[in-house]
Image 1: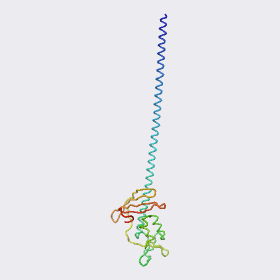
Image 2: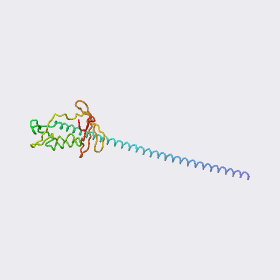
Image 3: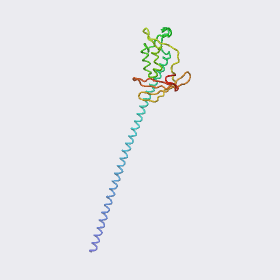
Length: 235
């Protein structure tokens, strides 16, 4: 009887130990699964944050690039417009310097020193020499003005003359003007200067003109030009 009781006690102890061991293993496995799930969730959240940040950065970069491109395009369009105005003014002034493109009354003539027949100006742009000077100096400056065009209003003889309360123009038949036949190309752009390259019909052949434009007193003006790489302000 004692022997049976002892064996029962031993068996009970073995069963309890086994159950205790099983309980410990179950608890550890649950904890490991919880840690793995937490790690996976954290990794996913980190990936989502990183992906969101990357997407936002890419979107911001694309937006900035588009904004810059739009600004560059707008600036270029503005300079193309300014270049066209500069070339038109240059062409007009060159014609005037050549003795043409000014409206006059051919029948009213003023002879100066019996050698310079001036005709009376009827052109609405000009009523006196001061108007002519402003017209020229609003469009050209620098060496282009002093080398080529100031003779229009202060030469000897000048192309224009005030007399008897009227303005008079010394007409001529000199080769002048530029028949531009290409769109202007802009280069060397700074805040207050840029270069215009354009072609024109030079008595039947195409010639290339390079015009230096500068901002002077708030206005864009031609400051010099060269034709086919030749001397400045000479055609």
